[in-house]
Image (cartoon, rainbow, N blue to C red):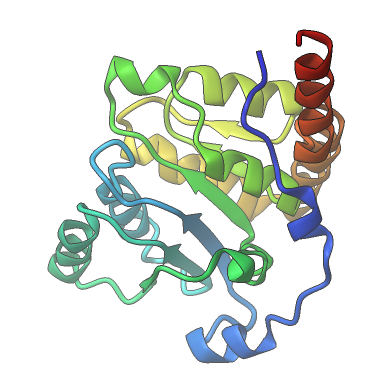
Length: 210
């Protein structure tokens, strides 16, 4: 069995994110980030609800990078709440992703509270680990098991927006802990989920089974 893995080489390069900081007004902000598909499974409204619950914090800002069938619904919910602490960026080229993850203080993996999604492992998980950023995921399951095994983040109760927000606050209130979680995740993904190494493993298997 060969799992999906992290494109570590993409996230090892140094990046200049000063332009993005200026563009989105992120100087001295605690940036709560999300990247990828905004569909039924990802339930992006759960992020909007967390942003609403944390709207009293002037220095917490939510940056959502990606697109999908549920993006418009999530944007409408943000407008209904009158939120000024959240921005939907839209899709960006894959090679630009490290610039965005470098902005994040914490990365989110949201899922709709359905049993099926407890079995999935999203590709963004490996990006976040390779970026060396702490993770908050809002469902138990296989992805959460990797986060816990890596010592890379916190798990919120499925479908509980308040607990999702509380877990974000745990990292906000303890930035040193957040840095430790990020480092642990990066070390873990390099050891177990480096795409370069897994490709070699797969190649060796194919050669020896001809």
